[in-house]
Length: 148
Image 1: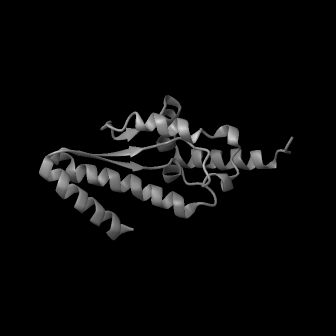
Image 2: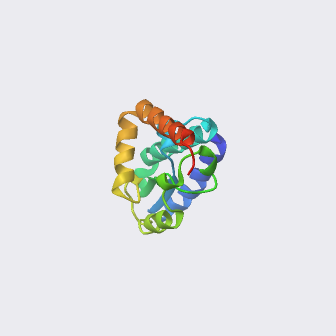
């Protein structure tokens, strides 16, 4: 992962440095901040994306190149299905995609589709352990509820 990410960044940045501008969006996840039971591999790669994006911003920001983190909310996708999170608690993927696509030219360090996701990220960054445990507990409770 380390060598691949570094090579991609170097290749893209040569072109963008030459033109004096560019935006690279990396997609992250709240679990990269808080962790989550059963997906440590995924969570750790998202944590790595967070750090890589911040580091590249520091390295190349003076060349007019912006690196951002796009943070979708918990979204109802195939990859989220095994987590056991109730569908009602997840966002519609098409809606999330449209909202993030509307922000494709944004150079803000962190881009979210809505206020709720921004608030969640604020809490997750301030209290990662607490938020991680809370989401695991809520998921566990939802799984224990009898289905109607």
